[in-house]
Amino acid sequence: MSFSIERSGIQGILLDIEGTTTPIRFVYDILFPFARTQLGEYLRLNSGQPRLREILDQIKRDYVRDSEAGRRPPQWEDPPLAYLQWLMEHDRKLTGLKTLQGLIWEDGYRSGRLLGQVFSDVVPALQRWNKRNVDVRIFSSGSVLAQRLLFENSEQGNLASMLRGYFDTTIGAKSDPESFHRIAEGFGLHPNQILFISDVVAELDAAKEAGYPTLLCVRPGNHPQPAHEYLTIGSFDEIHD
Image (cartoon, rainbow, N blue to C red; front, side):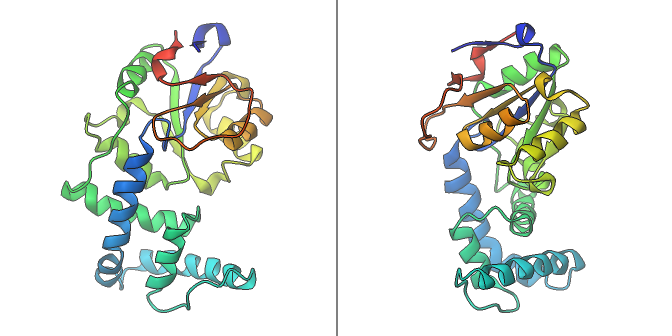
C-alpha cells in the first residue's frame, strides 16, 4: 500500500519508535536487558543524587497505587530494586520507570556500549521528508531522553537534526485521543495535517479519533494486531512525496 504526502496535505509526521522506526528485538533483546543488568549498580552509584531521589519518590507513588489495586508488588525497599525489576518484567509504561531506564541507557550510549538501531528505510525517508520541509517528530512511551539518545547515537550516525521534537508519556497515554490533541498543539498544526505511523492499532484508534491520518506499520517481529481497516505499510519507502 502506498501513501502520498502531497495529495493528503501532510505537513507533519509523528512516528512511533518500537516496531515502526526500530526493530522490536532491539528494545526487548538489548535495551531492556541492559537496563535490568545495570539497575543495581546505577542505584548504588547515584544514591545521593537529588534527581534519582525525585524519580524514586515518583515510583513509590506507583508502588502505593499497585498495592492498593491488589497487584501484589514486591515489598518496597530502599533502593526498591525488586519492585523496579518487577515493573520491568511486566513492561509497565510508568513515567518514573521510563525516566530511570533512560538514565541507565544514557550511560550505555555515552560509553559506546549501546548503539541505536533503525530500519534501513528510515534514514532515506527522514532525508526526503526534511527536503520537503515536513515537520517530523517522535511519540513513544520511552522517555524523551531515551528517544533522543537512540537517534543521536544510532548505528547510522546522529539523526537528531532530522527530528524536530519528541513526546513521551508526560503528555499523556498513547491510547488517549487527548494526548494527540496536545501533540498537534506542539506541532502548531491541525490534526488532519499530521500523519501518525505506529505498529499498534489501539494507538492508531486514539490518533484517528483526534483527527489524524494514520498508517499501520507492519515490520518483521512486530506483535499481531486485531482486525482493523487501517492502511498498512511495511516500509517508509511506501510513503511517497
